[in-house]
Image 1 (cartoon, rainbow, N blue to C red):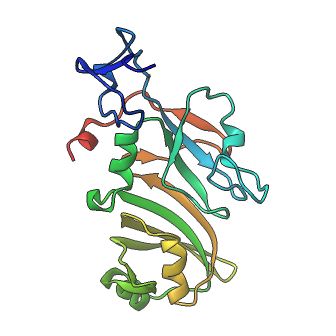
Image 2: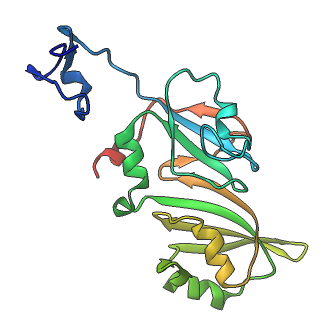
Amino acid sequence: MAGRVKIKGKTILDPGTRISDPGNVFVNGKPLPKVKKRYILFHKPPGYVTTRKDELGRPTVYEFLKDIDDWIFPVGRLDRDSEGLLIFTNDTKFGNILTEPRYKIERTYEVLIGGPISQDEILEMLKGVDIGRGEKAQPISVKILDKEKGCSWVKVSLRGGKNREIRRLFEHFNKPVKRLIRTRFGPFSLSSIKPGRWMEVQEIPPGIWRR
């Protein structure tokens, strides 16, 4: 197999060589076929984990994506009990832009919490709250949407995203999260996609690549 692969005319012998531009790779003198970039918007229902296989045998989101033949991976995650917008792609550069903290991509959630929330608590959130593990949560906006049966619907937007950040934020105020729905991730919206269904996006907003 030695000598069969070349990058920019240079023979590659190390099988661990990383490739940044497949367009410059030739195998047996022929260029690698271009792989179509795919961008999938999926409405994750609660009760599913965001992995391809689960060692505990729990149902995974890939059960809804069996019709997609290409290899795709989730951009970020939603925990088992959370729901809403989950993005899948085979474009690693795109995935890195959305998830790297330095790019500060905005994410929006609608959260059902137990009990009321005061304006003073919202102001405290906006100033930044210690959520443990040496981490701080500081939403860019918090808005009360509605109230129902002793609970409150709250819309929260933040940049970046730490593990279970929204849940830990409200735990700080002793407000248990009863539902957590991600409605927006960067330029993408959950829109009218129903739970368990997905929609493919053909074009990515050009501004996201200028980061």
